[in-house]
Length: 547
Image (cartoon, rainbow, N blue to C red; front, top):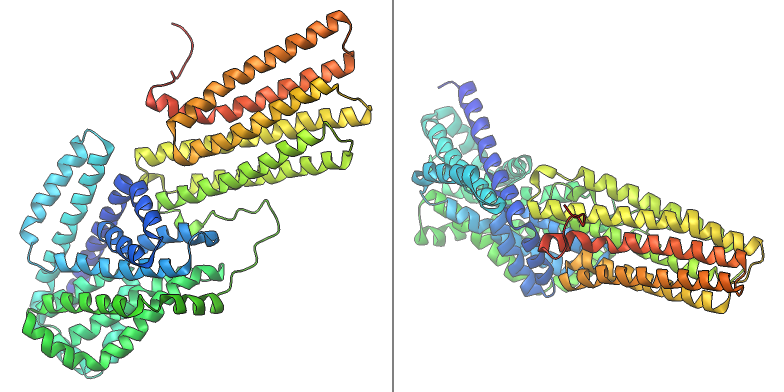
């Protein structure tokens, strides 16, 4: 086989390996994305739990990069400290070693069964989760197939005198081997792929055990470069965890490199198989690294906070704060970011509602303009959220995540409509009242205040329904809409009775009816948040029309 043919085969087989890892990652994200996010959310409370969460989630995802993106959704805006985030990364590094451990055994005979079983589950699965798990199984089969092909391709190379002489020359300087493996892991965007390639070279006898251990150090170093490079050019806060992870691995490599002969002597006694030797050293290195650094993480965190201070947030309230573009390929993280931004939008609308209530008591025309300008903030946030949601990798969405995306977008749309009603209708009525020096009767003001208070309460309830998917809150939200309608009818009837009896003044009466009408429209938009969840649970029919 010519050198060109070997190179082409190697490139294709490495690409197949990476594609298998990607299939496993995306399949697990679709099947368990929200559950994994919950595990990380719970795990980030203490260092030990964060470490264990990082191990577990990364073992399932087979990607420490995906785990890092999930951590970013909790660390953004200071919701979670840098210390537990670093603990997660220590756990993620150990998690990747468990994957390598499993793949280091000779299990290539089962890849046809995995691919066939995964294909059947993907094609005939009754639920989306079964089909997603079929995708995961196919990915595992492709990974094992690629390893089998890699070993077959590399096997003849061991007789190549030129390659052996070249690698023997390089092996005289372990630092070059470290840099070579680091470049390989960086280019592959996967320490797992780089480690498996190193193990294949060691098994074929192309590199000796000492060189294999040096390259394992390089693979660990190189895989920590990608998150760091992806965080450059933005907020320095994004560099804290990636830089801390890289620094810990760099220190580990500096300490371990001169000790390779000593380590090799004792590890060979445990298992002399070249592939297992590389896998075991990879595990030992990351476990020792985690044991050494998990205790001083608070001091490391302080240094990172000092070297990477938080950039001052824009004073522009219309600028989104949580819509991280780096998370778009990880739907569970991106949806969490979008939900947090929608809550900011809800807070802005709540401020507009409170302001509109005050304007029916006060005569400050400048306050009318201020609230109208706030609607521009709502519109800009809505546009940013809509663009962000449309940019999420929809192919990686599970049915549950697709439903979640729809609910978040629907809530944002309703909030935008509420902002428009306040701006274009309520503010126009408030300005009209102030300019014409109209005074609403005390009972009318009391009714308007009561309706505003209910709207503010219902808005907070709607936000709770969106975030926690609580059926009880959704049921209460929809039932409150009916009570609000009864209140509007009672106010309207009382107003008409007063007009007939001559007790009401025409201008103020019409003004009150217009205000009540607009507040009822706002209530309808807020209550709509509960409809989707109640339809899904069977508590609300999609259509109320009788057949």
